[in-house]
Image (cartoon, rainbow, N blue to C red; front, side, top):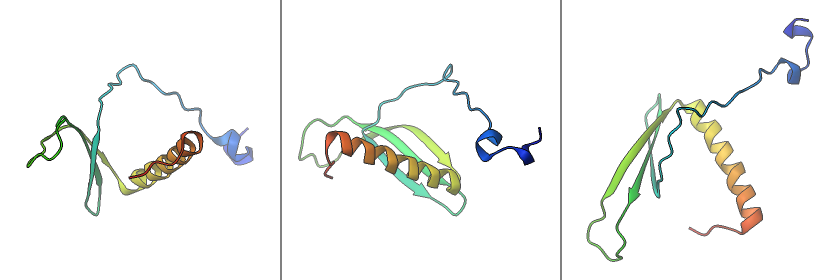
Length: 94
C-alpha cells in the first residue's frame, strides 16, 4: 500500500528516541539570542548563593542552536509542558 492511500496516522514514521549518547547538564539560568537564521539558547549555572552581590558570574555550559521553525516547535512544547505542570502543582510566579 502506498503512502497516498494511508491515513495521516498510518503515514507517520515511528520515532525511536536513542539516548545512548545523551548527557545531562543542570542549568538554573537560560538566555535566548537570535538572528534572522537561528535562535540560540544559552544554558548555565549561577552559583552565587549570597544575595545583594555587585556582580553575578554565570558559568555557561551549553549552547543550543535552532532554526526558527524548530525554536517555534520548542516554544509550543514548553508551553504545553508548563501548562500541564501548573495544572498539577499550581501556578509558577516569576
